[in-house]
Amino acid sequence: MSTGVNQDRIGPRVARALAADLLDWYREQARDLPWRHSRDPYAIWVSEVMLQQTRVEVVTGRWQAFLDRFPDIESLAAADDSDVLAQWAGLGYYRRAKFLHRAATELADRGLRDLPRSAAELRLLPGFGAYTAGAVASIAFGERVTAVDGNVERVFARLLALPSDPSRGESRRIVGDSAAALLGRADPKDLNQALMELGATVCTPRSPRCDLCPWTARCRAHSRDAQADYPRRPARKAAVDVVSFVAIARDSAGRMLFRRRPDGGHNARLWELPSTALLPHEVAGEPSAELAVLAGELGRKWLVHGPLVSVRHSITHHRIRAVAHAVEDRAPGAAEDLAWLAPQEARERGLTAATAKLLAALPTLI
DNA sequence: TTCCCGTCTG
DNA sequence: CAGACGGGAA
Image (cartoon, rainbow, N blue to C red; front, side, top):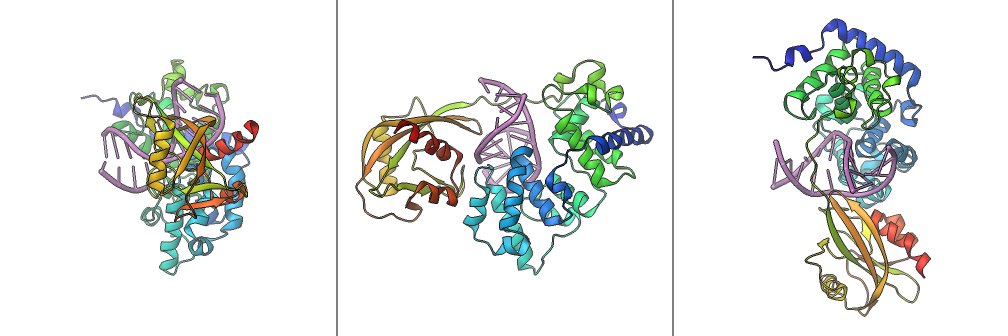
């Protein structure tokens, strides 16, 4: 039976031609990114973890700062969990910081000051999935192993006009095999980075620049002028509108009451202005009632005033309207995970993006 | 408003 | 295999 698999396989001769054209293009067009000047496996690891879910322009501003603070595995392992998280604040997907820290700790506990050098061993550390293990092993250690990220999936989905989601099932296998075929005798570090670079700068999700692509002559999507139809992805779940009420309690010194979010769930262990859970509009009660519930959970007593400011924020598939109310806090002191802090102090501990947004919106209304 | 993305967990 | 997890670019 014909599944189209055989004709999707890239033969050795075509693979060599594709790799040669790609590498020529990469030598000319590669972006000059800071981590590409590093040969330190630890620094490359940090860059790869940051780049997993965060855009290059953001990582560019944060990578060196992280390394200044935690210059090697030893210092990262010795660091306090909350300091690592604070250094990560704003980058999102905070489990990455936790895994990074835990991996460093595991290595230090084994008496190691360096990463293992093979993808198979890296894969055993927290936060190392197939992609990151392949990326670090090939870029830092030169191992002949693929590193298939979303860019690579998209490039091959278009080149081969793959009929289904390239991250799943048979198409996923074809992408992996294609990347491996191109690896051939090329420098794995350059080849992998060139593939990702092509996806990041030319074969982009929207409006690909096919006029700049070294592969247009062989690209099945381009030959049909159907670049926009690839990669095929399943429909996304619609975002849900929710509301969250936020308490702004101030003391006479101008500090505000902040709380640390619990472990697990979103924004785990980051600091925020105390806020209710995300409530669908249908079930949300009056702000004063919802905030009274929150006060009870936090062991406080609040007199709730009218709304001060409201901001919109999105996380995962929630569209959040965060409505901040001034409250008078009548309880003394602050239990664990609650603290009276000047905004700058709170910022240093690591704020959620929503709270940073709220704080920025506040002064304009006061 | 839509879309993007690695790893882990259920 | 499906869903959780963030923030920002297009």
